Image 1 (cartoon, helix red, strand yellow):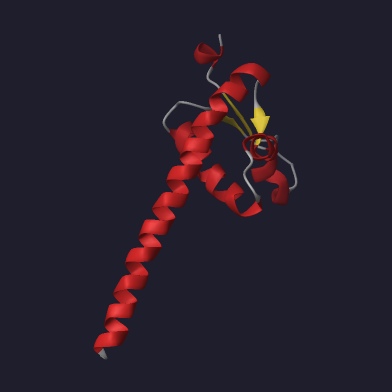
Image 2: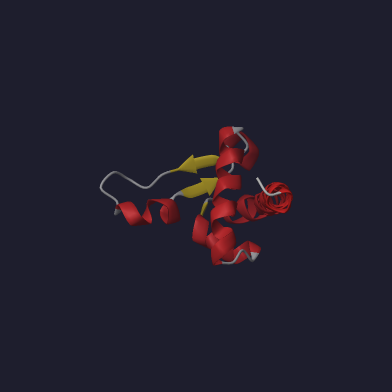
Length: 104
């Protein structure tokens, strides 16, 4: 393999990992900043949280991943919409809230 192509491929891979980790880290911080909103307003949908935290359309997916990680850790409660809900709206209409012990 051409040495220039090899170096280019390695640099591209390293930069991709660094940039993606920075994006995920910033959205995790944005999701953790939403705790105050959730404490004052109660459970909110992804769209409501994205508008309130200033996440754009592209960053909304990263925000959802960060919220899902926090829900998996038990810091948030994830409430999916009821069965029969349109499949294309499930991610947008899932509500995120604080656990009942943290909401008091």
